[in-house]
Length: 437
Image (tube, rainbow, N blue to C red):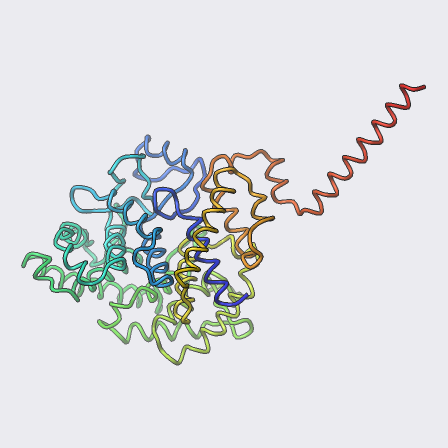
């Protein structure tokens, strides 16, 4: 399996994992309740069993556009249509955390926030030519003002009722610095043009201070209370416009991450205390951050990281832990190696993704993945199976026998079927002999 097959597989997975409304997301437990959501909203989330994210929509859309070189890609257009329906009267987009799921047919959202508002506008930007975005940017001035006014007292940005966090601050800064590159006098009032400059200075100071406080990293704490290198890699991955404001901060942190590479297998660890055990997700994110820097000195590191990815991604224990955002970054990583898809092949892959959805998603026939999925996509079977189970209640609610059969190797099924058939014949013959005598 080489980069071409890896990129095609990541692209197919993103198409399969896209929700019908146009966004990407992840599964939640039926008993999960999200803070700040109303009782009715929590009931809705229990029913859908998914949460969806504009941030993931931005990551997926950017990767797809780079890979296909097609801003008119149908998956991206579907995502944009959905995002437009989730703007509130103040110009904000989003929800608490990674949730952007509301009632079918409505144009309301749950708790607009700066992160999703920033990534919503970034999605519009990557899907348009610069001149086209400049033309419509005036209509988005309310959203830009909403983001500027959402700045916390410490100079960063965060989710509602939470402290500033590196992810929110990162995406806001990515947007504000991109807006700064345009002629802001045509987009914002004089007051907000000045506030924009102040916000960028404030955001850079917050990112630098947070980095210094955490020993040279932007650590986030996962559900197990452990700090992760992926948060640092995420900041550096989407640092493209920000780095010109502080190249030293950018370069020092890239060097720090590059030196964490495991010499034995070429991967990177997920946690500081992982005892150098390489992790697939961390390797994808860190290799992507190094690739986007375009620094020649990281070429060898990136090449070794690819080897680790290629060797480990066929393993279901690894691939099923990847989210839509991880697959998007993996696709993005391939494009930085010069991998793109032709128009004809893009069409073929979209047809394959539709076949998977129609044969597996709608009919609940998970065995299609074992039988008819092209052999070059063998490493996609487990993550696609997981995505479809998360997205389809009929599949998710299969009884234990059906689930067991879906996950049982064919030879075991054949052996069981043969044993049952032989036993039935023996019993039938015995019954016939008893009747005869």
